[in-house]
Image 1 (cartoon, rainbow, N blue to C red):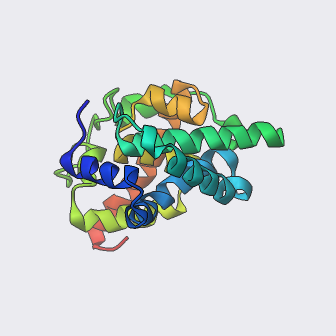
Image 2: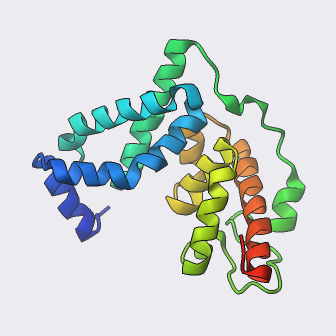
Length: 204
């Protein structure tokens, strides 16, 4: 896997100990890592976990080999830190109460590739991923994400923003793949409601 030129340049600066590059990295990714930490470890430990993850990233960046994207690599680190904290605290993830998979969610709204089976008639966007490319919708989506439950926010971020595979998300968040699908569909359904309203009224 070859990394984009910009990523390669950033990684080179990070490996050279460029503190300004590391500060820029934190500014760009802190919120994403915090979302993952909250989803696994809860609000009480999320900030500490994320700070521990940044310390680990700083120490390990010299060993980064580019086998995955830098973003995926960092998300894996924060996931591991969150799981370690849970083991130390002898707590359980808040994902335990996820309902059984409801086939009607899949069959009525989305197919297995994440495309809508019957997209709303006034939309010209046929996948959740393409929504993120629409400047006018991005702000609305970002606002909606702030009010989603942490599990939905994390799964949506990993799948539709970071393009992480379902099995990788299941591993990162210690979930079954079936539960990942349920959470993802719930997040997308909520976003559909908000974005439908936005397209009809021009307001979030």
